[in-house]
Image (cartoon, rainbow, N blue to C red; front, side, top):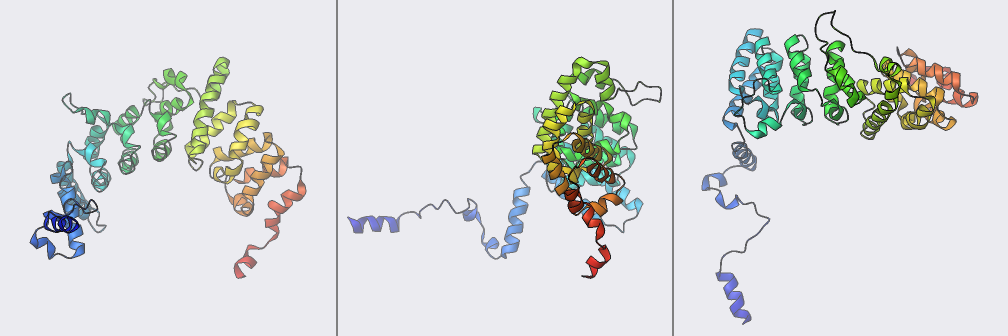
Length: 381
């Protein structure tokens, strides 16, 4: 019986090996003569040929390789962009989400004319969306592109090169309304929010910034502030709370939850996050600063000193914080006293720490001791 079982195994079909790739038996004799590098390249092209819009993406990538040459003149770039834009027209949304084709859409935004750039912005913002579009495209909007690793670079290019076009600004701001709370605490979307607030005019992004304070500010966010100088101005958070004292607690609760999520994702390096921290400190009581803000930011003090808003937050935390939290902040600044005193904003934090600290020995050891050393001698050593 043993001999019979062995004979049946040897004469039967080859045993199925799940570790082998499913395309291994489909190779032709010509593929066997290819080198391993060529086989890998052929497999890559075969896999990419099954993607959506593959017939347009491949020539678009070839045009992009010609477009990125730095020695090209302006006329050549415009000609290449015209061909590239014609290939991608109506497909920018899907192409922007592909990791190897997203740069093609970025090329049109960077090197194209104002008309090409405006058409791409309209397509990505959904301004030219048709009723017969599929539901998948309707669900993917500009806010979703901001959260995708490769697609968010397209949005960054839109903001950078569309900041001088009033129509582009209106389209982008309109597409991102009611989405800022999610983007501000997203690890990828935070980069878009940072560039948006730093590039667009403050009056244009004021409605978006109000969304970060809570849902009760949606009424003010609907006011049009992109008009002329006589257009209505939105109130600041401090002014609004002073006029509506009953809104202080809901605003503080909303900001505290938002800031806590941002701190959990280490967003302390972004300037807009520093502004949010300062807005919270401007309406919070000393007890709120001592119990929530100071313990959360004590070990991140150095990151906050890059902006004026962040430096003011550090000063507030040093003024109202406990002795234990002040020592943590002092340790963060150790070794950076000289560079902080030369910074346009960070020197205020050093002065505040020297003003509020009772332990003069510790201040001299952590902060002022660095000033007694000659930096030229350290370099020579």
